[in-house]
Length: 488
Ligand code: ADP
Ligand code: LRH
Image (cartoon, rainbow, N blue to C red; front, side, top):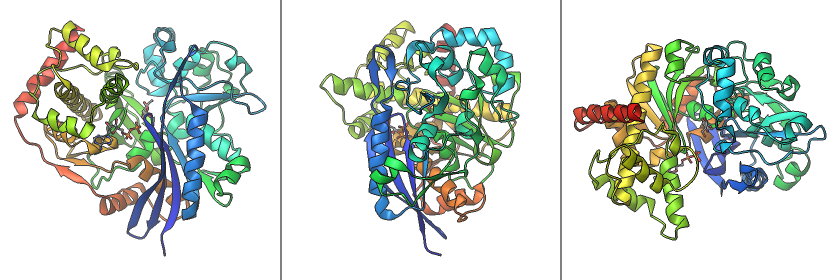
């Protein structure tokens, strides 16, 4: 059987890409057809995604992919954000960015009104101020009243490509509106934020066929013969599919703009301890649970690079990482859960302020700042994965780090040492691979999840790290971060 090709659209917070995956017996390869920047826009109404520009990137990418004659197209993207459509199908305004400040205070008020315990019992989700349920409670203006449908971003793209309306389950599980046990929309929660339940479309599982590309999408891309298949449309769910695990006792770090640190489990963990530790139970492929915590990830580094570039003094990331590897270890540390690191802005200034506020010397130069961010991230990785294993009663024998962070050898080394476990870095494009493999399975080319992962492990370049260095130094650093958190 020769290889078949599938087009994967992956919309990340920092960039979007369309890749073509070729899948055959013992064969799996990816070719990038198109990559485009994802540049949020600040309007008087707040911080928005430029969703039409992103969709233009999707169409251009699919047109470039058409040459490979893909059997199908799958779309994944970041979680929680949505577009509202009126009864004629028109988009009611540009979707807000989850980093927009409009949920400040609102999220806490909704949580307190419903009760943190009840929310967790119903949804199993960690409290993040931008969960869809809180964004809806913060909706101002007329859009919600005029809306006929709410579509999460990948579902919106699927709708524009095919006309189909639906809610893919892995992404629906991030909204704070899906009942974690029944996997249907919760009428109680929708009512609690004044959302008419009818706005939420019928959920479907990954593998569901949405139909062929139609209308302008088919015309522009030349892909009228291809079908759109629902994949695990939450990018993190696709990334977890793309983890090249070969044993059952693995932890993962899906590390890009965010780091998502956790375990794959057969069922949710809904204990008080899991809630208090703010762990989430999002849905994965084949009914699995993604038991994980969000960590700030590479965002503080990304925002620092953006700040320097905007000031006319851009930095070269490769050179900077080389210098950071030689910088003084553990000079200053950050509690990356501190809300000051969430919104866009002048991150180097914020890091310096944070250090002053916590009685530490601000990083004296850029390499020191990068070292401080990466060590803090490695410590956050350690804390989250150890806590996940504890809460789930599991032992870990290996950690997989996938996503753009796998390019960052210093981060991989620090994370491996902090955890004291072997770490396998790669694939960088785990999300796109997970997307492609779910399409290939819908095309009867592949079997179970373990088989998909074996194929990735056998075909993709991976780098293995073994723990080195002084384990005691990491324990001492962990204690310092705990003290910073208590003091903050
Ligand atoms: P997202 O899907 O959230 O947009 P990605 O998985 O694409 O994120 O990861 C983006 C991050 O990967 C960047 O912020 C950067 O820190 C890191 N990265 C990408 N390429 C490199 C590289 N060549 N060296 C080091 N880090 C890299
Ligand atoms: C990563 C991600 C993450 C969500 C966040 C909004 O891209 O989807 O899983 O929590 O974006």
